[in-house]
Amino acid sequence: MTKFLKPLLLIATIMMIVSAEIATAAGPVQASKRMLEYTYSKTDILFHKNIRKNAPEPRTQQEFEALHRRADEGDADSNYLLSDLYILETEFNSYYDSDLISEEESKRRVSESLHFLQRSLDINPVHPLALNRAGINYEMGRVVPKDMKKAVYYFDRASRSGNGVAAHHLFEIYMVGFEGISKNTAKARYYADLAKELGSSFHEYTTKHWDETLKYYERFDKVQTEKP
Image (cartoon, rainbow, N blue to C red; front, side, top):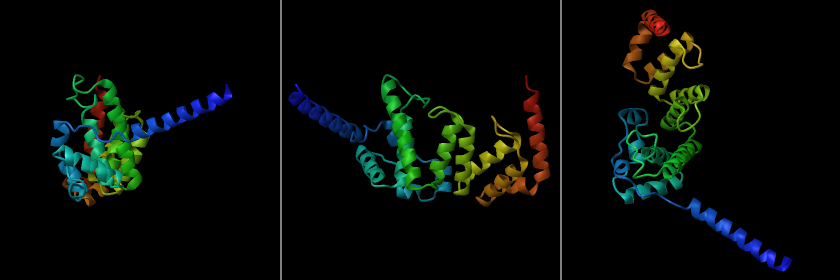
């Protein structure tokens, strides 16, 4: 019996290895029309000027597959872009159509999106867009469990890496306090100054008229607190 069992175990082991390799090497999906029409936001380009040069948005399946290859070769920007592209055709997008993409495939693509985002950060730990996206994910609590402390951590890293959107967002969080994050006007001022340095005309005003800014947000906080 034992002499038959060993070959069977060997065959089973080989099949497991082959199956894992096939799963890992599944490769690019067929890019949807929405994926091939995706374009970077103005703030993406503002706070990461070379993003389009390094990882141009694909307009054909061939370009989409080339993007995959660059991501596999270790390009952080290509991985960031793939993370955005893969989340488009999932249940977390308002245009999601379960008749076109099954719920199972949607979950797989969410997993792929998170994989590409993490790989972007592994390659470039100070990627300003990937850090901000990670912060958004933890704040929203949809593709990953909600965790405001982690959200603030990533927004802080993004802002220190040159992302003015993240700096402004932290300013707003600390000005009034938000979902477990305590109000802290000293920290709010720090991020306002940082956002100004990163080109924000809004924070050029807030930092110049700080007492007025504090009074405005105090009134705003009071109105929000008094709401039924």
